Length: 298
Image (cartoon, rainbow, N blue to C red; front, side, top):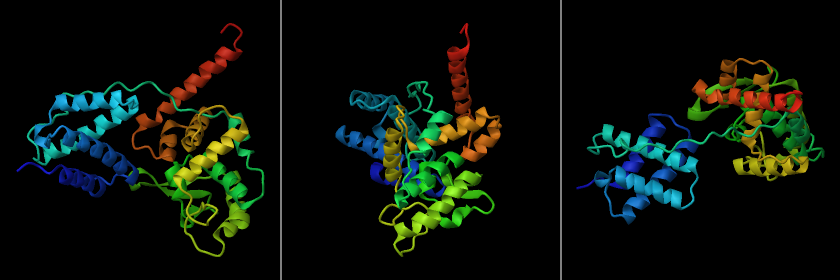
């Protein structure tokens, strides 16, 4: 009797959640990739034992023909590589079909970063003193002051704030806890939000989360994304900006002002410093742009 594909995927997802402690967002992305691949195997009437590298290449080619981006195909290769390695180690399959599959080369892509002037312009947009206006300003200030991921921002709880010490506590990827310092300006906007806005959003109810929507519930990642897109448009900024852009800007600006790379790694919660090194490339690129713009013989 062959290996049940659904059970094999469920076993792997359970393993990476319980044994590896990966984040829910990472597990969700692996689940999506594996379910798509499972649908391909069902269409082709293939069992797990029958899959070889030719089938994998055919599947990746189908993704490209469907218009999937290079990064999506690379992510699929990563998902399948880890899945089949797990099955091989467990003795579920005899050979690993990913052994001869090489992922496509990742295109050189530096994330968008806002200049200090653009950050200032964006922060000035929420001027109204309504509860939502104050919340939006506080949210922008906190994102730029701490470099929090958007998932970390929306999951921030009141108990995680230690404003008297100038510190914020958060759980990052893989449920790794880190402590981040927060500046006086962001602390001031936190206090304005708590005094003037959050009670109005709560409407007498209780909620442990810091940032709330207009119904007094936890603000979602999609909600933050929509708010920032709207504020960016109002600021007249032409770049493609997401909540993650503020994280990139935070890292780039403190590096440009002399911060050590290891410190930035700690602040961002990167497991590997090679992930943090992308920001040194951004700084060099910006340095070249400034040189080209202002040197008389550039």
